[in-house]
Image (cartoon, rainbow, N blue to C red; front, top):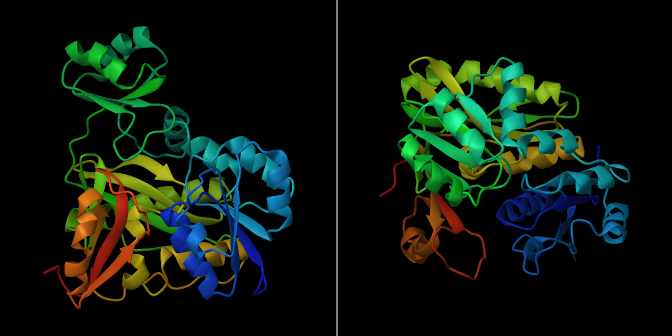
Length: 357
């Protein structure tokens, strides 16, 4: 258990690191941000900041020496960086979770091995393999790069097999995975927190609506079909967390279908669809992640009031902040980013116990 005044290192300097830093400070911890980016919205609210490359071992060693534990704020931190740090300081979660989440084919096979049900999929290591994958999976389908890509990036849709060349060019001809389309009623999240001792708690599942491949809203309560499938999805995520001996917040995204929950992907970190927990749960995903990393008792994940709506402020949406602040029921979070561009998450707004005006 980390004593107050201890330092928690965070790999990554974005808004998730910013909100983790605030939660850590409220529990009496200092935070040290490590990221290669010159500008860091997380560093603005942290005690320490190291700007250095992910493979700069002398700087990584110095960073580790100044931390009592280290965690991550996004899943694309290089696995080798985490492995190096793990030789110097406790890193929670560890390299295995990152390694699985960073490769979509590895992730699908891992989840299938634990009894999960992803959408039909096939490996597409090169253009020649795409034709065979289409023959197996059929169309419409979606082609996703094996690595990287989020918020709709690194993906191309194929309405028919005739779209194969355009889709392959659309993902810059990287190794990929082809996924069959799933007919679903809703998309929903399962967000858990697992402590060092293995205790696991879940927040209520939100229904998520995406626009242009980017999460637009998360809301509660979910419709009955999601409530009916929540337990099965939770059981899978618990098996994943136990198999990985995971510590911290882990998120799974699912499709609610007529045949039960279909696994989409997992994120070994706090998640955009859990931002509502800051005001809408007894203990937020950010505080509970810090509690888990520090070895503290986990807090209650109970929802405080219904309904709950979280809306992302993307691009020019950030200009609505003054109007949102005039709504006495609205909680506004501005991430402190100065550049406004289309598709960039700049903040979010949450309503608890009421619907947005």
